[in-house]
Length: 253
Image 1 (cartoon, rainbow, N blue to C red):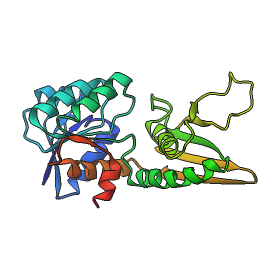
Image 2: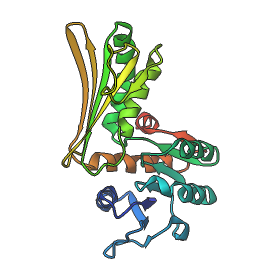
Image 3: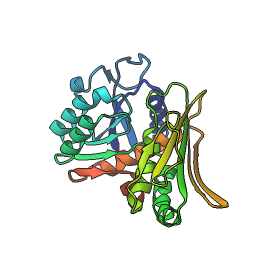
Image 4: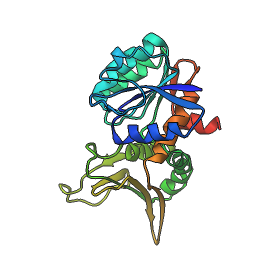
């Protein structure tokens, strides 16, 4: 039985993960953390993880970047594995995560979907071929109208996967409105769409002469992210200190 502390438990993703865990006999949420506690919750909820005194095996964070400092301190003190699903960290926070991973196990991913993380593997192979043949690369991501960061962490992760696989050091271009020039071959265009209740759509487009290849992923429910986060929590328990990602979870299946 994997015992989980869920940060951001009252949010949409938190409620989704709570429901998934109720249907899974191998995991249990033993405590939640949220500034807006749900009075009907079946587990205790704390406004700050620092106040949590419940024994657990791992922490899943689907809250906000501002909570990172307390979560890292808590996991270091108790040597708990942390699954960080929050996006929008600044450079200093990313450095804090890297430093903390030397002291305990951290799994960080911009997207917890198993499908997206398999797609990242496929993109690395495809990018190596298409980039050398002069294909232009564009990424289009779409999310619901309540998402505050843009482009999405997943779009950046897809761009990074392409960049890492190629010899070219690509420039990421987020807005062409101020550019009156021909598109450079050494750039990746990244466009963000916000509207309605779109859970998460990502297209990676390789546009060449007379042919276009598109890799697409569509999330129809937040459950895909919740299932990935739960799988990651199971994986992180008992791991040595270090930085992990969803590719490690996939490789362990």
